[in-house]
Amino acid sequence: MVDSQFKKGILELCVLGVLFQEMSYGYEIYKKVSSEMEISESTIYPILRRLVKQGYIDTVKKSSQSGPPRKYYTLSAKGLGYYQSQKKSWRQLTNHVERLIGGKL
Image 1 (cartoon, rainbow, N blue to C red):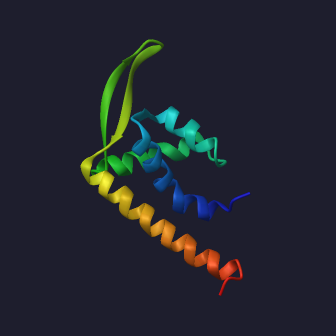
Image 2: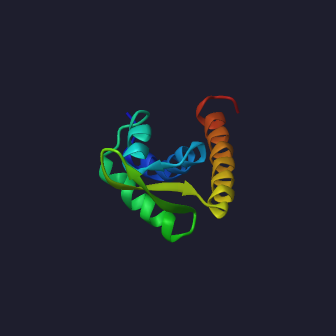
């Protein structure tokens, strides 16, 4: 099980990663992230709102066959650059940590 503090630090990157792959609506993002780690649905929406406010993701409403229109999220150009930068930082960090805890000093 992953500690909740670790999860909080990486959830934003996970959300951006999902949106890098394809435009998605909130519940769909939750399902994709929760298939890999234990989170609650209510965790995703504050992250989405913050990323929209920061200009990293855009929204568009699309009609739905199963109810009212859905709000879809997609990476903005600014968000794509941010995602790539954060992913690079994450990989560097995990490489350093792995060397320290993996005994490869």
